[in-house]
Image (tube, rainbow, N blue to C red):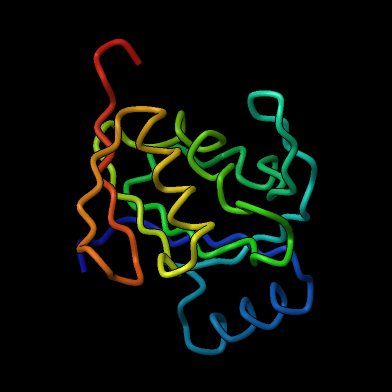
Amino acid sequence: QKGSGKLIALEHMEEFFEATNEALKQHGLDDVAEVRHARLVEAEIDDASYLWYDVSSISDVNEVSVLIVDGPPGYIGSQARFPAYPMLRERLAAAAMILVDDLQRSDEQAVVDSWVELGDLTDLSASGGEQAILRYARSSSG
């Protein structure tokens, strides 16, 4: 409606990547939304190893104003979604929103708590809700 912006999603399973892009094309939405195939690769963060999306698939993406975190799935490993904020923090716009689904699960709760400790985030979530809503505001030192 504002005439700008694009939704970019990451998908590690090729069949879902292809099917979703085909559906977007069929509905005439491929100019405003796309799914990029991003295989899961090992990511090292603070001496811990995670399987997370290959960020080379979004090397052209910066100034993200809304980040929705709904993957990878929990069966990938404990706190599978943790890398999202550390890996994408530098790509966020100076003021951005982060939405995390499945907050009723203890892993996602721990992920959100860990992100808040990393800094520049304010948790706006309603207590007991299934989604976390975080406001990112880049600090003057970052």
